[in-house]
Image 1: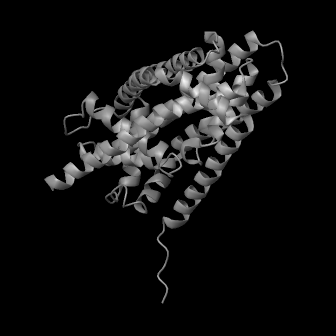
Image 2: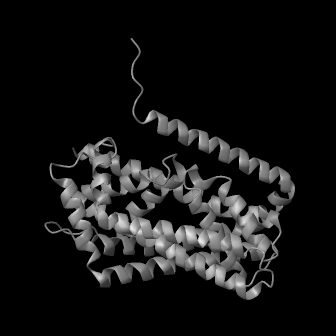
Image 3: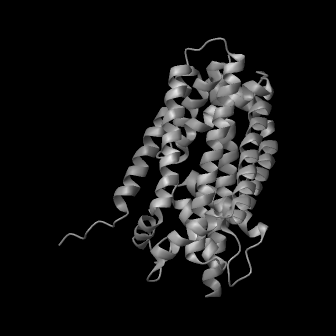
Length: 334
């Protein structure tokens, strides 16, 4: 008698397939635009990786503070400190960027780790949902800023129809996501979480109603939402410095406006390719297109993506180690 497939096997196979396609796309782009030229650009910018790593850690810190504000203090326990939120945010990003989990697994792991620190499941889930929503909204604003900068510095408007279509589609998607939360999306999420008990413990009876109610309660704190929004937006804007510094190190200096265009549109492409682990291939293609709009060569754009991936690999690998270390300590205590 054949054993039934594990429920997570199709999703895992799909993730591995997307990883393979994305890896092939990266190889194709590097080969097409010249592996030797791209390699020289990466080596020229390698010295900025430590600086971009420190910058990204500060971005993670800002995002962690915003997440903590969105979740709020638990009613019957001491809230986790900023350092703990920073560690969990680090792990959350590492899982999403390094594993084939379609940008979902890291958020579930983050909720699980918050629960281990005394945050009730409904509050952890609702607060994380708000944090993800704010992060997506602020990235949309960041992308709009990049489009505005492009319109100011580029006399060519051939890109306008495509960009307008992207902005409209993104606005509709974000608006639909917010409306779905108000309409009871969290009840569906809680039902799906029952089937992911290996990642996040099954909620007690009545949790769907508490999770939806908790989301509505947290959304009423307008001051907290404003603070979290400002912090996330600042974190996005700091990415401009990484792009500007890397391009300058390669010998392709850019203005801050050009760096804003490249970083905002490139990261928008990365987010759009969330189904591909690490957005392999999608990120590289996005940077090539964005860089071409401001006169930067494609090999510099791919090298820029590689420099970002070196930083991402460092953060991701250490984040996965931190996750296993945290889980291991918990198991030892148990």
